[in-house]
Image (cartoon, rainbow, N blue to C red; front, side):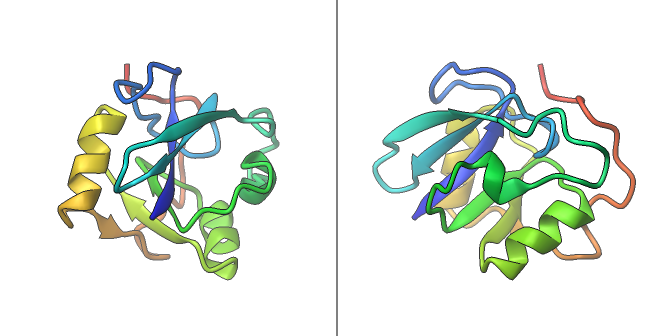
Length: 125
């Protein structure tokens, strides 16, 4: 499965996972089975509050799921409308996150668990 994980910086599988989708400087697009990946820089990082365009941020990349530390309701709704599953993770690195994803330890985000009020720019260090 091809998934997207927002990251604070590009360190490959050791990239720190960003705590919020819309403010992530980059996205690591990864095949969950093979762990082959590529990095995409967030072209929409400086969007106005509530104006996140998640699919534009991903530059047309065909993905099946997104794993986030946090995501606003607007971005969540746009992803769900595009039939992209959104999963929540509290793991610090991409390697830990993809392992949790592959072993079924991550739960899907719901409208009730998406961030209603969030602060941009808070990423794991």
